[in-house]
Image (cartoon, rainbow, N blue to C red; front, side, top):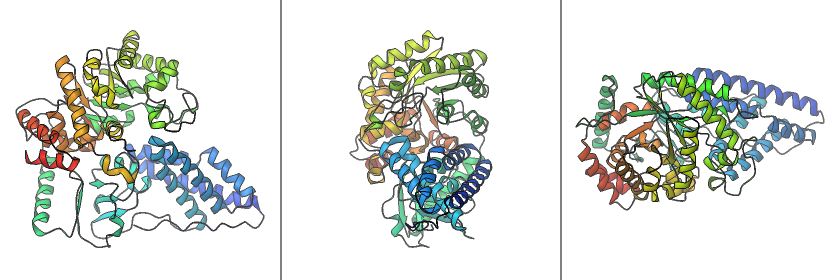
Length: 528
């Protein structure tokens, strides 16, 4: 993977600030147009990511910062480099969602600087032969348009499981492992075996491993050609397979891939780029559009998951030292109750206007008191089915209290893993901790699954863990009643579930629970 562009020299322009500003404006326009074209070509999640990058390129606050630096004497290149760099540092310091955007912002800056220099922006190398791509990280604009006939896998040194690189790779069904220390030390043209499910990279694999990989690839190809059926175990136990979606326009493609409904609909797309809270009518139209794709099917909508790590001027943009543990999710909504009321009112309207089975859940719920507040609030506004997300370990500890109140629980394994192991999911230095196979995480899932079974309440999985076929089997063995994932993963998970009975899934889960490490849990489940 090509190195980033060299940093611009820290030098002054010739005195014509207006001319320097005009060059920057033209470069920004060029980059925005290029990213817009890439977005339209990418479609789906890739389109959303690239459209967000366009907004970054044209951000008024960044533009003002660049202009001030040029007027103070900096060249256009240096002004862009310093302004974007300063904002990147702020995003990283904020952690969580905003830290995930720092890499995206760096790519936008590189593209603007490349346009100012009249050179191509760093990107994916050209190759006539299929290859595994290794890089520090990969820009969203490149990930979204990877040539699937050439790129067989992706390995990055930086990033975490919820970075755009990882999310887009999963959406395009590209095997990917992120946060691999030392991958940049591997020489070009080295033969690699990448097992994304196991999280392993093998250099110069032997003939036996190569044969095993080829057999698994052939098996996967055969599965892809098989008729799409509902999710079920080998003994007929139903396990509905649902889709994680971020926009109504992604629904049709999910249905084509066999989604039996929606297990997580992220509503943030309506809010994050808005200067003021969207109206009830505007929200209801979007929710109705989504629900119309799933008549008679379950659609789980998450209430706005925002706060200090996804700051909204009309919700909470106050600085917090540790936003991942701050006023976010349901906490932020309770502090701005009108926003919560408007959203749930819009969802009630969409529920009544369609034939879908709407379920609504709150994010970042910590205990029974918060559960009771949200359930009573939603029911009071006329919602039929109201539940909570399990992302905070405390919720699992009091799972019996929570399942006595909520209609359902949905486990967000990304945050549950982050909070359980006290490891920021975007920090490459602690990426090894961000593994949902860890026995501590699995034990919390079992607590929730057991409590749900005792109370007769559904307990689903909506985190990225459900997209791992081997882990999906274990999660069902731990008591998960539904699995929700990126639509591209549905076929592989469906096939994996169809190979085991419920008793076998429980045996694999029990073996994983006895392990002392994440890798040990993987190995134990595989061998059970």
